[in-house]
Image (cartoon, rainbow, N blue to C red; front, side, top):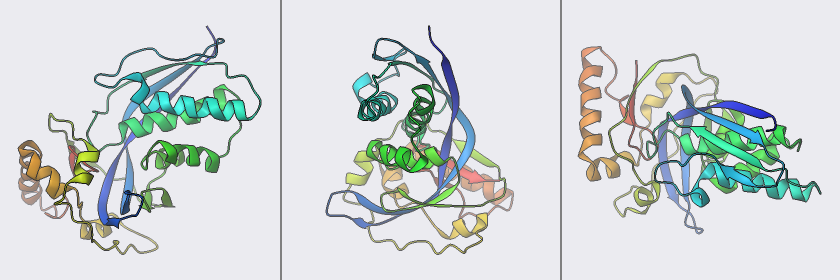
Length: 260
């Protein structure tokens, strides 16, 4: 067996997520913020010598052809061949700790780690901009995990501006459901006319309290468990004098969080 590379793939919280409108291509124009948290999946890649891209363990409910980590490897295979190099192949193993359908970006983070690690493993020497372009073709949340920095996101989430924020602590509650992002964005009740959040050049955490998550109302209406988790967090926040503006949902859910 060949060399093995490993990387911890972090989760993210969307401190706010405003849907500004729907574009002609069907995608939504977003204004959002990504805070990376120290909750990680483990991505492990092993070099093969037969050109095959192989997933070593099944991810529950995700067939290999739709697994973002596998799709990321096929993107890199195309990049490898574009450089005139034979693709050596890879074994992909992902140890999942970040729940699926949580709005925490686990699948996107895994895909970014595959891009980052294969760049080393196959000696492709692609720069961050090239990797980010590939990342965007896999999903709007993937580029932020290439950069590995807290960021403001615009466009469909690909236009990133680094956020310098001090260390903070969050409580995250994960209701026992998985939410389909596509179904939330397709819901006719989704508000699509929010304004972008005004963020200062030297932002502080409380700036994001003025924001909200436009997807939250849609998910809460469909899932009582998300509503229950938010209510629990809001009650506890009040007890500890934390602003009731904080407890909110991340991404398209189902995870909810509060800064403490």
